[in-house]
Amino acid sequence: MYKVSSSKGLRSKVINFIKENIKFDTVYAHCDIPCGIYDPSGAQMAAKTVLTMVTQINTIKDTDDYKNNKESIEIQNSITRRIIVKEEHAEKVKKEILILWTDYFKESDLNIVPDLHALIWNTCKLASLSKQTVNIENANELTESVSKVSEAFNKVKEVRARA
Amino acid sequence: MVFIKLLKVQGNSMYPTITEGSIVFISFIKYLYLCPKIGDIVVIKTDKVDDIILIKRISNIKKNEYYVLGDNLNDSFDSRKFGYIKKHDILGKVLFVI
Figure (cartoon, rainbow over the protein chains, first blue to last red):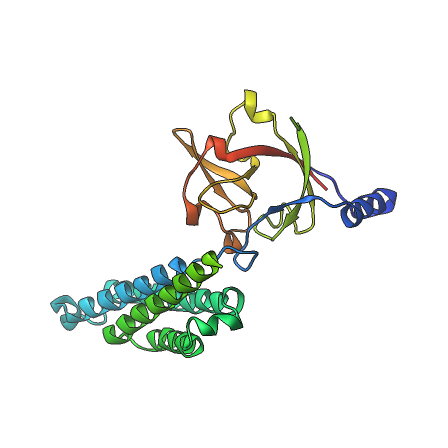
């Protein structure tokens, strides 16, 4: 594949003229915050990962190995790795949920899901709480809350498809 | 039949190779007689993604199925989300970009 530079000179003027004045069909280099493709599955996967990490950390904490040898570098390594993944995925939940909130849902969708704002706010708060704690209950609540966002998403999608 | 088509790129999933607003020249005949290969930048249309044409790079090939990724891995909607695609989903090859 060749790349034609449009940095300077007459050639760049011609190229810019073409780009600005001729209508082309569009091909999408689809990024995360684009033009019509949204999916709550990323947030759901991330929330499940948080729950799995919290569960694993608590399992390690209950082992005799941990109780007898808390300062072992292997134990610390195992726990740290899970904390890092938990942290990253809790952040991902927030990012994905906020993308849906700001880009997918519209004001008119409040007629379909009246408590949408509270649901999003609560989900993001739970994601933050899951970063701060290693509490299975919090992680479970996060997973459930993300599922509710997913249900809201599907409900809105269905109504839009019928319209 | 149109052999070459110009399309305007929207989105940044192919950054830094292709930036938003670039025009790409697509060959629609290349894959009639050649097989797509790893590294090719292609335009695709798959029923896994409704109604739009995507531009991605082939990153893996498995039994006539193709795994496509954006060059901007941090911000790309690609096979990591919709899985492998079929050869008939590949519409053409990007020849060059302006």
